[in-house]
Image 1 (spheres, rainbow, N blue to C red):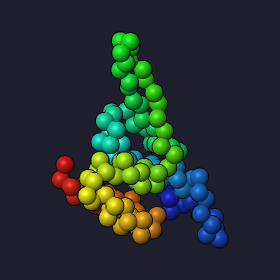
Image 2: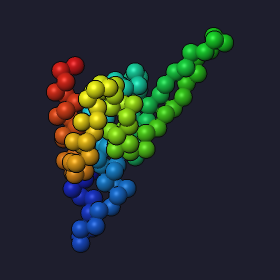
Image 3: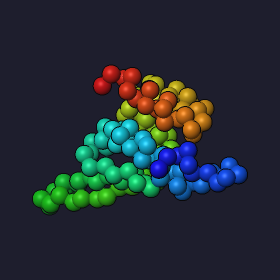
Image 4: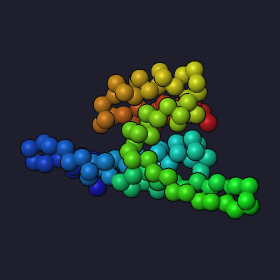
Length: 119
């Protein structure tokens, strides 16, 4: 599906389907950001953005936890994530630019900024 189809005939946006389709359309971008920010490998983009972390403890065991980011915008505007992606000095500028961008074009702008870093 596409976010373009997630509206009623009179133009009301259907938030649940829109979010699902947005996550699907931009899954590669969100996965790349999560992998970099949280140093993980397994990421699933469904209705929420899900990843798995391992916690190696002094008892000799490794504990696995499933973490869940509730929405793309929660990921995008998380200050800890933004600092890892754009650095302590620059992250606020990027977040302000993304906040000014409408949802319909925010992910394209995010991809532009993210991939322009040259990493």
